Image (tube, rainbow, N blue to C red; front, side, top):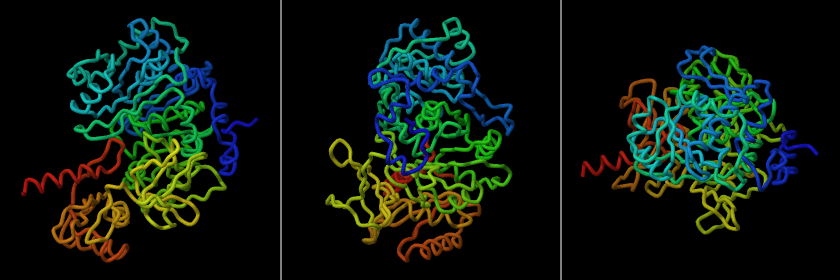
Length: 525
């Protein structure tokens, strides 16, 4: 019987995708499964086949600076690290935290911990002391592994034993055997994943078992379109859900070589890596695509794409046009969250599925979603409502607003708290941002509602532009927006800024903008 990886069409996905078919992709079963074995060990065949390509920000466009790690090398190191953890007395269920850039120590420690039954906790390398302390206090790791640069910061946080991941650690674990028998059951916890948030608010850790890898394959097959033979790349940090699950674990589980980025993101450096390695399939954040467009360097490289996907937020129309011009394949949105997984996709690589620009696509096989009014009734096509997911015998709110079209495609209309109501008019921050981004001089834009005595709220836009701000430029942008949307739907206030606050996943952080405005108003009062 054919495996799901052998099917590429939308029709076949609807006909064949199911729980049993997903389990056929793995060595493990419903009782015994280990992510490290499925992603690394079973593909380590002695051939030296690459598992991960790491493009370093300081590589200056020279692929010789990149790090290419084979399945064999990671498997041996992970086994040695697992034996080392046993020797150190680490017990199954204890947490091992990693604050590392993609590197050999990162993958060795990540997969080694998983083999022992310990729980891996990836942490973002740019966390400051408050953000790190909140997460350490929450998950209470036995060991925190980081690099020499971050060691002092790590030691300032009480609790875990701090280990520096350097050549000394690799030399220490090298005395242990290069094979290891995993100790886990399928339902055992494997990863605690923190979602992005401010340092003053601790997002709850999402707890993933080893069997999460199986359900992840719906997103891999139909959200990113990964199949054996792809040359894959995901520039998102593996400290976050997209970079870890969709960019690392999903391709490796299929034996597909993946690529990632280490260091401060550079869009030109990324495009050089995409060219160097003949990448055919990439999944990235909307911001990554926008930054490549804004670099003006797309014409300097050759691209080889057959499939593209993005997540995190919608891509503005101007960037979608740039993708069509330079990458020659449609960018396919996939929608979901760390908590609920990916539920809406555009089936990259499926020739019988029409990708509608800006659409979230249609549900993954087996998922049911609706756009609903406040009374719980379904919205008509074109009507904006709340996006609801059927889960556990009832409707679960995604806290996002959306609409559907006559063909059953879903469209994102912003977070529920990104809706702006001004003088009785309901406006979408996302829609206004996308319109302003069509202006030739606007590089980035963030839109929020701010209090107004007369209208309740008015629209304020924060704009990063390639020309100086002025009264004339402000009026030009206001006229541009109202002409394309409607006479009431434009930013009454525009502030020109050098940069916008971003979440660690690269999305414009509107909550930070709202908090700043609230602080200004309180100070003025």
